[in-house]
Length: 354
Image 1: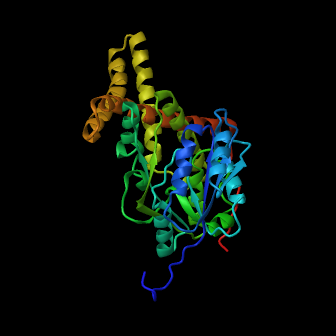
Image 2 (image 1 turned 90 degrees about the vertical axis):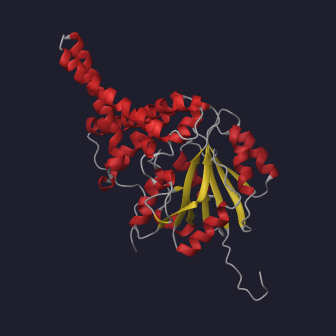
Image 3 (image 1 turned 180 degrees about the vertical axis):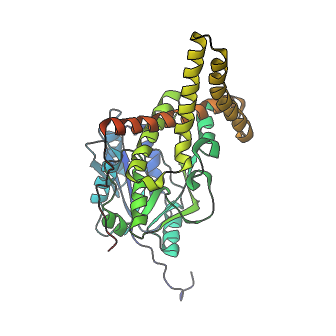
C-alpha cells in the first residue's frame, strides 16, 4: 500500500460456534478459524454442549494452544441456545460476529472477504454458499443431491447465483448491532433458527446479503438412517416456520409434503386394490409411486455428472430419502399442530423498527 493511501477500516471480528459430539472434527474447524488472513480477528468463542465423545476435553486442549479461543458451556446442547451463549461471552470490542460450526472449515480468506462485502454493501448479515463434499459413495451422492434443484430446490446458498440481497444465507457474518437489536437467535427453533433470524433482520429493515464467493465446505451424513433423521427434523421445523410466518410458504417448501402424501395414498390404493380384487385401483395406485420414481431416476441421470459408479447408484436412493423424509417431517408438524390446536406462534424475541 502506498504511504499516502488511506487506511482500510478493519473492524474487530469474533467467531462463534456451538458444538455437540464434535470431537472428531473440532480441531480442523478451529484451525481454519485461526488460519484466517484477516488481521483483526480478536477471538473465537465455542459453546460446548453435553457431549459423550470427549468434545469438552478436546476444546479445552485446543484453548491451551490458541490464546484467543474461549470455551463456554451450553447446558441444553441446543444450537440456538449455544449461539446465544457464545454471543453473550463476546468481547465488548467486537463489532462483527462470524458464525461457524463443528463441521465447517473456513477458507483462509473467508473473514476478509465477508468483511469487505459487508462494508461495501452496507448489509447487516453476509453469507455465501454451503459446498457439500463427500468421500464415500453415499456421501458423494448426498452432496450432489444437496447441490441440485431436484434435491433441495432453488435456494441460492445451495445452487449459487448473483451477488445481492437474499432471504437467507449459509451460517452468516453479522453486525453485532443487528444481533443486539433483534435479540439474537430464537431458542424455540431447534432447526431453521438461521432462516428465522434472517427473516426478523429483514423485518426491521436490515439487509441480508449473498456473496457466492463465500464458500464453506460441508460434510454430509454418512448413512441413510442419520440422513433420514436430519431431513425429517428439517421438514418438521420448516412447518413450524410456515405456521409462524404463513407468508413465507412457497412451492419449494410444499413440494416434498405433497409428493409424500401422493406416494402414500398411491401405495394404500394399490394395497386396497390388491386385497379387494380391483385391478384398476391397484394399477392406478402403483402408477403414482412409479411415476415419482421414474422422475427421480431421470433427474438423477441428468444431474449425475462427475459421479462415480457407486455414487451414481446411491444418488436416486439419496434423493428419495431426502424428499420423503423431509415431507414426512413437514406432515408430522402439521398433524401435531392440528391435534394440539396450536395457535400461530409469535417469535420469542420481539423487535421493533425503531
